[in-house]
Image (tube, rainbow, N blue to C red; front, side, top):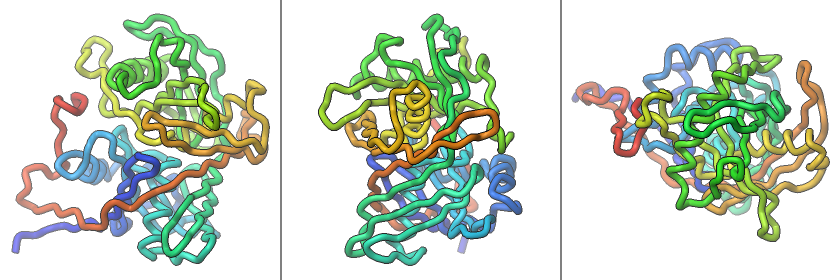
Length: 353
């Protein structure tokens, strides 16, 4: 028998966004704290990230999650998020996917009608409440980490676009937010390619021109995602968005690298970042539902539960909720003779990575 490695996974989607949950990869992760484990994963486990997210096992919009034992007292499980652009400290849609997978497979015990789970992440503890009915997780509520605005009404220069006004906010990751009207674009599936190209350019320009660093976790020091925002004229929908995720490095001189993938969900950490910005502008009070619609028309419901302080920043305590569905329970297989030990990308649907 040829040597084979098996990775036990549960595939889930949260309002459209795929989140692959790795159940038996935890022995690979080292570190005493979740922040140390995140840094270890960045330094030593990028091959695993590529293997599970790239072809032939993955696709450009797929995310994944490594489940590890908690490092903090009171936590039930630790979480490290894998995205196409790298390892991330937190993700709302991936939290929904992870909790749905763990409870529906009984990896963690589920009690009805409500199960509470405490996740340990590199940016702190995250309290999660899951509604459970007949063994099915029907909705997940995530009390996210404190969120704040790092740059407000900033101006950046973007090649091929010009000078635009943007904001930068943290909701578990750092986002650069820009109004779709500023770009002359509508948030619509038919504009998906244009949204990703413009988003890739904006992210690169913002990374170069707007420095960021989390006050209590200095290793989180980069803008990783772009949220293109719009209002809503649909009853029951507060606002709309399209989040552009990284699929490779951007070279301003090479248009073939101006690529990205749209978050299929309304984006949980992005919803928290946007709520923090709206609150800072005096446009979203505490304890008011904020129904955020993504590119597929699905929604997350956000709510600000309180205010706090993070270093020099006035911050808010956000909650988001949404639904997840298990799509597969299986094992990924890697044969030692497989020529693609870290998967592969091809420029017809991927960036030039």
